Length: 30
Image (tube, rainbow, N blue to C red; front, side, top):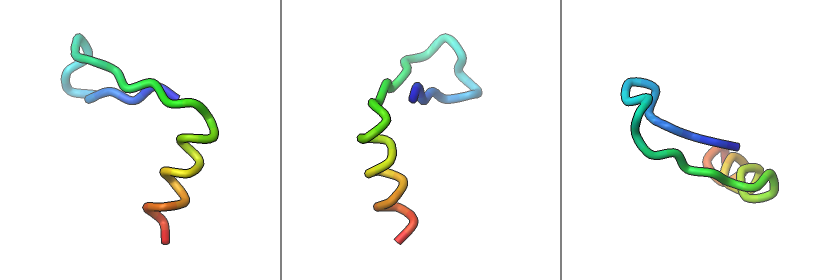
């Protein structure tokens, strides 16, 4: 999963593995 600021397309990206992304989503949806 690659995450970036959609308003700053030239900016940095955060790259996460699938298990890390799934853990993050599970944590924020509790």
